[in-house]
Image (cartoon, rainbow, N blue to C red):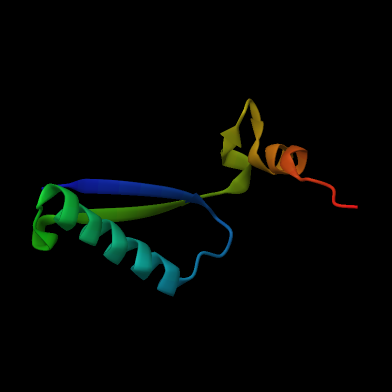
Length: 71
């Protein structure tokens, strides 16, 4: 009975995108591990931006530091 937890920042992930994630992850577990879709659980948690960090800083600051300035 696989359980997959997907966490994304709360930035307007649409219901269609969530449905595609659930379907895709379920199909991956069927293809790779031979698991039954009927007993595969996928949960999507949306996390507020201020509660998410990467590289030792809030994700908004990290993203700003990663932007490449094009000429």
